[in-house]
Amino acid sequence: MFAIAIDGPAGAGKSSAARAAAKKLGFIYVDTGALYRTVGLYMLRQGISLEEKEKIVENLPGAVIELRFLSGEQHVFLCGEDVSGEIRTPQVSMAASAVSAIPEVRRFLFDLQLSLAEKNNVLMDGRDIGTVVLPHAQVKIFLTASAQERARRRCLELEQKGQPQPYEKVLEEIQQRDYQDSHRAIAPLVPAEDAILVDTSDCNLEEAVERILQIVYEKLPENTIDF
Image (cartoon, rainbow, N blue to C red):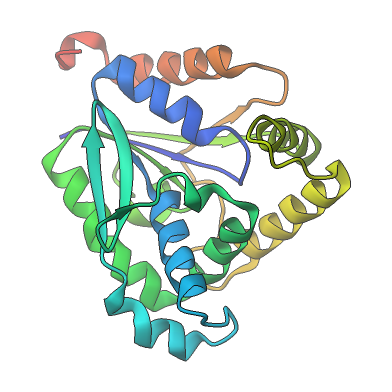
C-alpha cells in the first residue's frame, strides 16, 4: 500500500485539495481532522467542558465513530448519525483543537487511521500524519497559507453557508487555533523533517491540487501504480 500524508494548519485548504488529489489518483481520502471534530462534537453534545480532560477521557467509549465512503466521498457518522456537515462549525473546530491535545483521544483514533492505511492506498490529511500516524509515508507534504489568507477564505466559506462572521473574529480564532495546535505537548503541528512545503497563499484550489500531484508523480512514478 502507498500512503500520502498532508499536514498543515487550519484553513490552509488541505481537505479540499487532498480530496481532489485523491480522486485523481484513485486513492482513498481520509480527513483525520473530521475524526477529532466528531469527538469534539460528541463532548459538546454531552455538555462536557473542554477543560475537563478526565471527563472527556471517561466519555470517549460512547463516541462511536465510523467513516463511510459514499459515492467516493468521506462521510463521518457519530453513533449512527451522519454529522459530516455539523462538524464544520467554528465552535466544533475549537473543540477539535482542545480534544486533540489529549493523549487518550489520539490513541482512541489512531487505530482507525492506521487500519485504513494498511488496507488501502490512502491520501490522509491532518496535523500529525507525517510525523506520528504515517511516519513512513512515501510522500509527505506540509500545506500552509498565511493566517490572513486563511481567514479570508474562511469568511467566504461561512458567508456562502449563510453564517457570516467578522473577519477580525475569524482571524483571531485561526491564530488561536494555530497556537494551540503548534504548542500542545502531544503531537504538535510541525512539518515532518522530510516533508515538502507547499504554500497556497497565492494560488487557487486547482493550482494547489496540481502542485500536490506534481510532487506525488515525482515521488511515485505513474508506472509504479495503476492510476
